[in-house]
Amino acid sequence: MFTGIIESLGCLEKIEKEKSNVHFSFSSSISKDLKIDQSVAHNGVCLTVVNIVGNTHTVTAIEETLLKTNLGLLQIGDQVNLERCMPANGRFDGHIVQGHVDTTATCLAIKDLNGSWEYVFEHADSPQNITVQKGSITVNGVSLTVVQSSPNSFSVCIIPYTYENTSFKSIKVGDKINLEFDVIGKYVARLLNLK
Image (cartoon, rainbow, N blue to C red; front, side, top):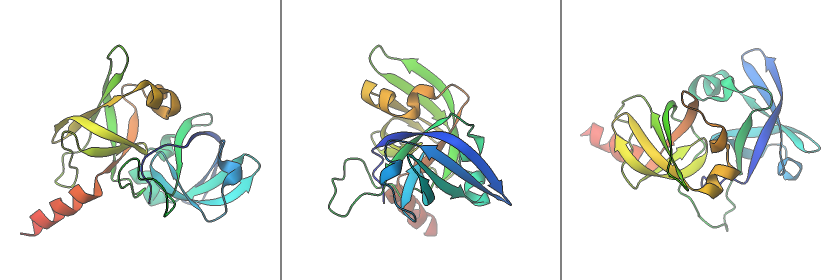
């Protein structure tokens, strides 16, 4: 389980295709401390570490992951948000994040609010894709609070610390991002649809 509090940025150093899988190698400040078989969220996608060499670690994405996330759009030099699993005795600073991306969304607008930034994202309108004002959402692995909410879009505000220490500073209008909707909201939606 993750909490959406980003530990480090990873820089994509190498992409290797093997059948329908893709191996991504990232350099980061935490790579040397990782272990083979450890789960690490990359832009909110839970992936298993398969190799470590110095300050670089490698993970493998299967076709299903590539189809549901923005990982297949990454290019050499791109940065991703990294978070290791939360230890059982750790602080719960964000919200419950499983690392199971639900869908991608498109950045519609970025507004400079003179000290913070508001990002507007559009996603598919679906009973499972639920946001509520002041609720939680995970964008590229970052736990955030929803500001505005509609059936197929929402906005979040980013403080300077988050802007500087995550990949938000490189998001542009038109970019695809990974979304994980709040797991509690998804269970409630499923229960209501069963009635």
